[in-house]
Image (tube, rainbow, N blue to C red; front, side, top):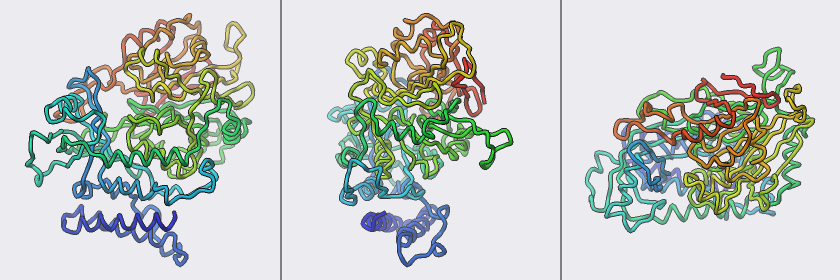
Length: 575
């Protein structure tokens, strides 16, 4: 970390400390103590005079996320919320997660990602430079406010908010005993909970907000700076068959000499996280048995369904098996299908060193309906030099296609966002439709196919890209696909492309990554905006899959998730 950034961060911590000096409560004292440790680490960690013995261990040094998201700091700061417009059909059963920031968090973003602090000799080759290290203290974090979608719709349609647009930022304040009076003609109280994700853990706090109807510009300005940083300093791959990126993937995946034959899809509720793995027979690594174990190869999305399965003000945590696994992930490569929170925000559980591995994702800087913490995460990966953004020119062919073993291929495609697909898919947005799609063709372990013409097992992982966004080649591949990760968590979609194929004689498997409560109302967040069906699985979508011969499997009915064998026909294990 350069001295300029280091100095700005120390000054920021000093400001926070001053704001908390007037408070004598135990929580404020605890935060001030953490600030002192972090400031000492910043001032000494990069000093030539310091020694390793004089510095606290990484575990003893708090992260910026811990401090910036602590309740005393949030209460002492000016805050902003981005009220996203809910769907027209929003009712009491729908919830909306909105970005929540404070002035101090915005200052932190500017201190780390100010272009003036970074002067690469070749901005287009950021992977060749390491301006910062993946320090646990700088680990990305996030903060969201969860409330009933119908309440947001009522607010944006009320008299005081009529001149404001949706998806705008509004000044907000945590509702407390000290802030109980406000002008009801220009302010609104929103009941809800804060989700605070930092330092490999999350906290859920019940916290109503007072929201002001006058929109704010400062968060928009910082969002613009983050987009500019990604645009100016990021690696972008536009040409299909990109040789440099293909070579890097081949090199990363053991030069194509060792293939992966398994994919584990984790139980993360309404979200997505999958790990492609190879079998290691050596049994020499830590924790292995004599027979060997599965080694991580490619991480596909790192999502998590925050809040939707956790009661406020309790210590219970949903998906604990996944969280423990995620903390030990060690892939060679990470791929994000797109930047929505339910595919990204599990990054807080990752070890910091995973962020230094190569990451591939679709471009983000041109999408304006994106969570500011997803922008923050993309900017952080850019600064680490580990992110390559894909913006394919010709989407009728794979952007990348590389051999991953004998008669085995990995292909990365990008969805087509045409006017027709937009009209056919009202439940999606451009980020869904332009998402990345993973295709694998793995050499079959033995010939399982009746016609003996197919010697590899075809699998498609669609992220949130609907069937109508698939290139023609992938539409045709649906007819011979043995494993299908169903798009958009099984939500309502145009299935005409799917149903245009003859049902497969060998029962293929369709995996739906969604909560097992997606089709009932037994899951409760908190009293007040209580029961909901969050992005429920569509019955017509299920029927179309069944008509095409698919067997439905859901990771949420397993403890940790499900494993599919990519080199065998329709083999699945619940774990």
